[in-house]
View 1 (cartoon, rainbow, N blue to C red):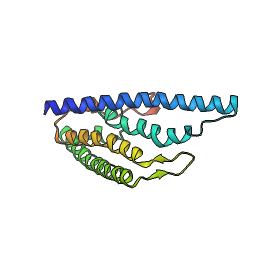
View 2 (view 1 turned 180 degrees about the vertical axis):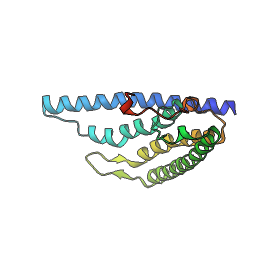
View 3 (view 1 turned 120 degrees about the vertical axis):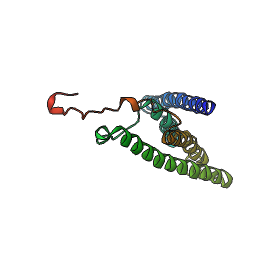
View 4 (view 1 turned 45 degrees about the vertical axis):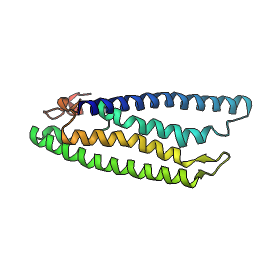
Length: 179
């Protein structure tokens, strides 16, 4: 199990690094498009399509599992701090299991759809015929490690790095001067 956890961490780290580079590429393409559009009246014909169909999708989906591992995900935990520790752990396991199952289904469907789109030669209509399968494969590649991370969290095989930091006392209200 330890080797599997390390492989998952390596996959998450790799995808997060790719997401970071893709974000830089997205900013570069956008900046270049703006300069070419307004300085030379010659915008990139492909810039918007690449950014919205591939780069933005990759930045988004490749970050999911890493963000969860680091505890940087969006969490609505208003009631969780009020639960007894055993109830909190049980509730979190059920939530992680449900989310993991959903992420696995999304990954499987995206992988199937990517294969189908590749086999059928599906393209996005436009100035340049962009392949659809790449976009769907990005979704599958991003959701698969998320599903694994969530399912491992659900069965307690990996600790949630921020679980120990869940507050046991109710949060102070904004009226009391809390940030």
